[in-house]
Image (cartoon, rainbow over the protein chains, first blue to last red):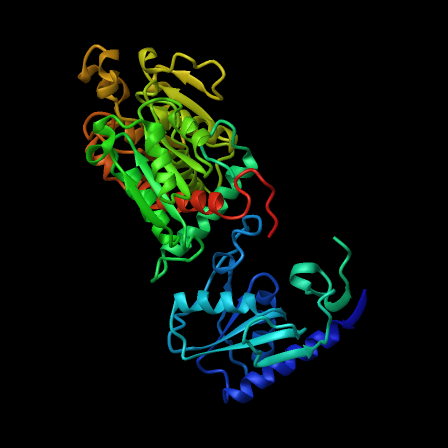
Length: 177
Length: 310
């Protein structure tokens, strides 16, 4: 396993994304961060923490489980669902979806459907820690921690303190099934 | 594929997983748009050979909230009157595209027979006085959401247990989830096969009343012969009815439940039924979420008994 980001790199990427969000939106008004379970949730909180350090305002953070919106429900074991918890009405807000790795785009597609059922935001943007390419849908991120060219045979592992104990991004070859 | 036919063989793990899923569907039902797409394109058929309103409507509401389509069969409007058998009815609905079947029938075991004939999941919606697993699931959900867990709770089920599929299903589910269950009824209304049930029994409600966390009341099923089991209604009400006086003696945190339909003034005093410690309408509301969890689990992935990975 080759490490491509350590804990400091991850924190720097989060700080930069926070700055980019503030810059693009001229502050934090009307912005809501929605983390996609599992690791999008602590990432969204970390971005909100960074924004609070820079501007002394707290962006609302929601959590979204996309299990009911997957397009492969009948091809995999029944998923355990996590909590969907959105603290504010998303209608007319600018929602930024947050996830750890952007790959095929199918998770984001499901998240777009899920958010649409919860309200009608003014706009939806996407922030990811790692973009590893290989999209299968017309989806692109607005904020990227690191662009990471990969082959489909490789596996990207993101570990975050809240979920995994340690922090960093690793890449390795998938073991043969 | 798999079925949900009885609570007797459900593991703690399976029950916990279904209850966890139910909690998430409660959240879905509280949304402004209480509908999610996972069963889009699937059809749930309800085959109710016995009259029922709340259970059938609850299943249909659950199916529709998951974006499934619904086909309904009821004997009053069907070829049953022309002599069509249970088997032909089930095969006909399967041929029309039913992907999950919910079966209610007065004959014990009917849903098992249907499960042998069709190649899709079958849910027991109530068979005779035998089993009604989704009722047990919604009851366990109601109790778990109120108390946080069932472990260590004392649950008394009062009334016509002999004729009650709800009692039989509840006893197994509650016991598996860690509750201590006591059946409270005249001997003539206790089941004949009580040995082996994971519970105790008594004929004296007043003796156990104050230690109960949950008083679960059942209707006397006169149509199944329940009313011939005791000398008179006043005597039954006097010994087993949850009157205002008995209600006042309940422990501080105790709650009252009833699967409906209630006979006010018989097993439950009207003031008790309307009290905020009666969870009857919570049971009805949570029943939709519990049935969504069952339909979702049967329709997706690999069914009820397989290990789940996120």
